[in-house]
Image (cartoon, rainbow, N blue to C red; front, side):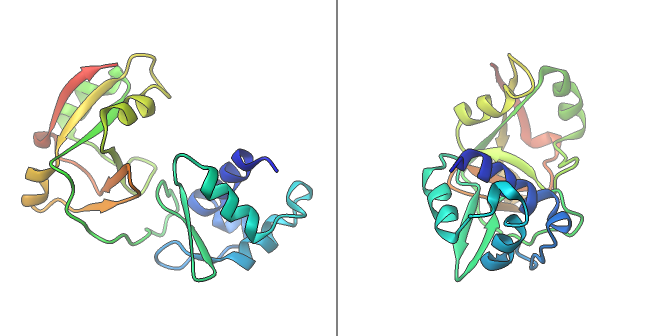
Length: 182
């Protein structure tokens, strides 16, 4: 079983195209495991997929993109579906980080961070994680520091994506500074 490929397929189905898989996500992004299995089994490559494969995939993943609970499964973050997935608001750590290509820094410092095609802005608890994210699109990305404590105190809502990822609706430029270049 190629668990990395399974993770990518499930992320696409649960985050971006549930309609293509005929999945019915609830307001928190959960779908019945049996519904996802049935949909995936329509493709020859996933004909023998089982719930245990989902558990194994999640256990082996270092990025913790999915979770299973009470016979349901969901993607924890990264959604681009039109219907916004409801997240529970939480107080963030004092500082969060965001890795971005150099070419976007001036715009972000002027206009803030916006979710663009996603539902939320993605932030990291660690600079190294932000650097990895930024390197996906720029060999030497900028690392932005977010004054999350001050933003939260001023009414910006934060949501916990997983142990390393935090989400926000958007971040005003006044809470953002450039920490380093990758």
